[in-house]
Image (cartoon, rainbow, N blue to C red; front, side, top):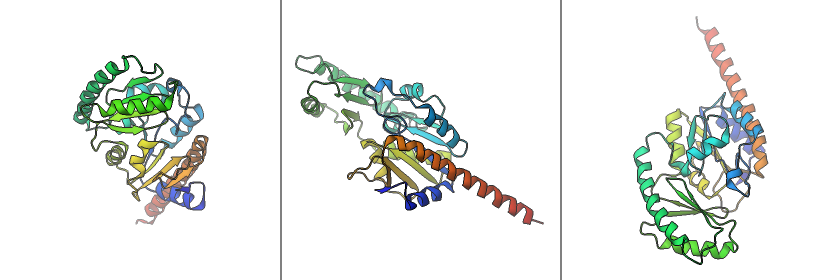
Length: 270
């Protein structure tokens, strides 16, 4: 990974802004800072204002691990695409796939609910049912390390083995197929007619985008990591504000350049 706020990063941002670009963002830890209680997360007013300005020049997608119903209450504006459950829910054309995921998650929920009701489980473990995926939060467990190990043992006992994606004191359980944030982004590019995309994220599930390493996708991670496949990084979550400001500047410049070119071509015609 290289710093986005560098000459090379500026050049790549400008290059992508010149085309038909889709601007896509994760939510928690990217557009919104991480908070101790996930229910308290909201889109900051300054970020919302900047996203609304971006939307004047390019389509916007919010691609999150939260459910669509949950994220809709938190952002305060309507992006072109709102995709939940790590890239499954809300993608046009994937409704049948979503139904299969919902059935699998219902079976997992019954098994996990039964297990967690037994003595010995830490009451600080919280199960979040997102219909198409499950999240097990253990941030508030008395012993997070032992709770994590116990959860891993529970997951291994499930009849239909899930894809387990770890996060910041959370395990996300998803159906093992090709539906994830990366394939969702490609589908949204197709639907929007974009020939390139910018994607900003901060967590393990965002690596499904980063690891594609496609030249038509400018991938940016919040905070550097030796284990990430992202092209560039910004140092902190609050630097997303600067990223958006620089994106707007380049989108405006590209739009002005396109207008001048079209005007010049029109005048040159007999």
